[in-house]
Length: 548
Image (cartoon, rainbow, N blue to C red; front, side, top):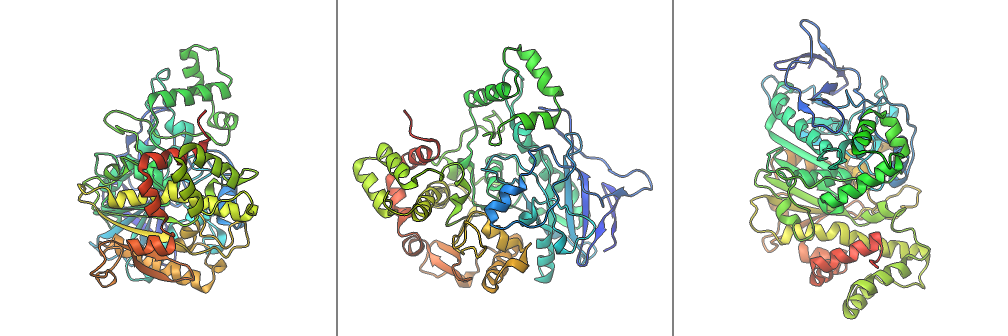
């Protein structure tokens, strides 16, 4: 494939050639219509007559907090060389990167894999969307859409070519944080601008991806952590966006849609942080609209709990453990894969798991929330005790919080919705990290992505590389419509099977009850027996404190 593509609807595009792929960067997919306003779909050609569009340069990021990569390095457990300088722009931030295999044949339509990116920083939905590391051999640039180095998805396209199942890789920028989600009656804003940017991104794909050699009727979206949260929110919409979804370590229950009252409280906090109190609504709106993005972001606390808004005709309801099954399996999504890491709550260490005595705090929350019998059962099952070492208590509490916030929604989605036609598969990640960090020996949040995308393969040991190969193969099979597990892997006597990645670099296929008993010590059964509302109350108490 030439580095110049004569795209039938966008016009000629000049891309960047690599050994097995060609990459088209910074292509606008939507038009920015102003701060706190909905964008509109970019429908026409992007190149002028006779002059190819320069898709060799990275488009700017949507404005966000600086140095977010440091938090992701801490989660992954290793820091590599990186460039912290990157261009940001509200006006030009809504751009897409498309990576196309050079093996593409004329008239061929390949499956499309979209990486729904939002990095972490405590699940605040405020971080940068892309980073490329020099050691991967892309010497002309440090950047690639698909988040920081550990999330970079273009390498996955290269893996797909090598495995004989080529896919087209796509990722797009969208508005984040306050600039993408703030809602208020005073501003006359509904929020959800970042989510609506993503909707436009998928609509752009449906209109234009065929010109890149992709199949608009075969789009697989996958996202991890906060990216999975927003993907889970997109699955609530009535508008068909993609055909399959892989939701990794996150769901809409981690950051439910906010009510009007909650958004107004957030708005008031923002106004206070920006020193705009005691101003008229009109003055506040004018000031918010003209402040430079850097000025807005720099004055806000690093952890601003923004989230989607309840909006009639778009996001109609708050998603809880009681509603997630029906709300994350729309009729337009044919297949869904969901899963978690055994120690996903490692990402909550600085916010929740940072008490002087974690076990004592957790036990107080449990006793204050549950009946005495239920509390005793939970404390015993998770072996919580103030007399244990701090290191042991951290892991025990982490596993309880992981089960409440990550494992339980998976179980609910699998078991408690029978009306949806969506086929649901599940996995659980138990491979411990070998990196010499605070997470060494744990199946920590983010480590599954590290193995799946293999963007720092030189740091992985042999068993981790082997496991990553199986993960990649299953995602490719899934994108090709061949299922997450093969028919041969599904025992006839097991109604629900679970893909278990790790420990020791091994992949196992277990029955659901066998998995819960052998790998989770029966904890899923215990929590389900407590009931969804009880578990949600406990999770909220652990995460936000006991209600007075």
